[in-house]
Length: 113
Image (cartoon, rainbow, N blue to C red; front, side, top):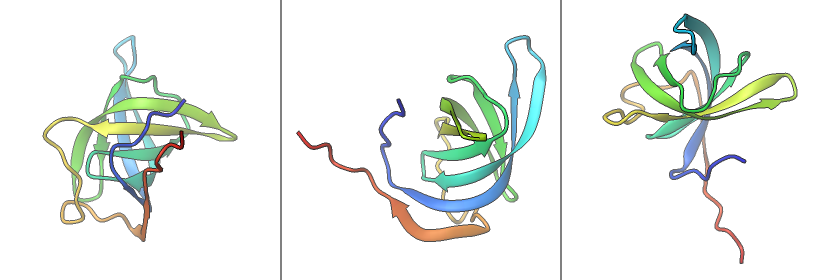
């Protein structure tokens, strides 16, 4: 189950460099595709499964931050990974504007009773 989003997210596409440490302490690095982004988090398409609660470093072309993996689930041929930025980091277009930023927001949907 994917946790409910706290903020609207903007659809986008861009490459980001993701780095993390495995349970054995080995540093791994991989490119991910940024799927959507908000001031507090993002969704990435990845080739590797990264366990929830793992701290990752994300490097954008003009910015970098740390984030915590909230979920990572397999979706047909890739993994979709939701991350929450660590305290102190808030994404904005002034910091980093993805190459393909679509002026369409994924909004929270009210639950019906």
